[in-house]
Length: 355
Ligand SMILES: [Zn+2]
Image 1 (cartoon, rainbow, N blue to C red):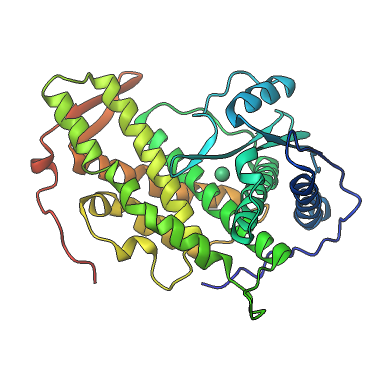
Image 2 (cartoon, rainbow, N blue to C red):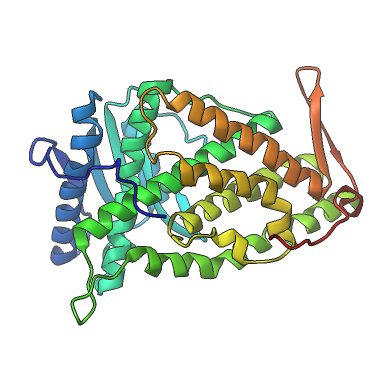
């Protein structure tokens, strides 16, 4: 998969797009680096991807914080947002990566990034820091464009809607990672001792890939054990539902990060085996197909169809994954009914080889 040629990152808006950078307690050289990256990255994205396409460019503030979550809560209050309904800061493989907050009218955005990562000094640590910063800035760009075309995102609670939304949110993670990768590669252009360019996708891709098996363990045996706990009355139904949602969100986002940095012909998920890969296949196979063929940033008239496709993939594929775990849901009155069956009956055929 090549880089998309529909993304132009020429810094044509340079100098005209103000950005405020608060580096907290970073040492002066790291602070100068982060300030420089943030300014250039914002110019390179907000110019061509927002300003020149008729979107209002939000005022943006970058904050380097020791405690991302505490800082994000304070910044959210400053932007007039209520308590965060989402699950807190972004985590990648258990590590807090950052947070992008936007005011309800999309006119202000604040990006919070962790001090420990921004302080990284050696070559790869600097690339990692720049990629994290780029990722959060690209969330701001992506969100402004999506909301411009689609309006605000609704809250969901019915299981089939939750499943659809997990797919939509993970797709944003994938795309924002791809954009950040393009941006970081172009801006830092890392080279080895011979002056040969180092493709960041291969560096980060292998790191994420190494963590994939552990992440999948949360699904199986993790969720299998939760189902067993419910069936032996060690866990109640609502706790099982919450755990199912949280683990499914987590693995969908992790798959998004792995696949975004994985540029081989076949998706990373086809290279590993196991019950979790098999359980989730009705979701990840069509989801990756869609993301690999759709544009990174849908055009103004493409958002609705793109979202409907992602929503359908998630709602169908994730519910099938849940069914294979033994968990089915159906509408009941104004809510839903959730049944937990023996997973051995729900999905007896354990492994089959993909061709
Ligand atoms: Zn993200």
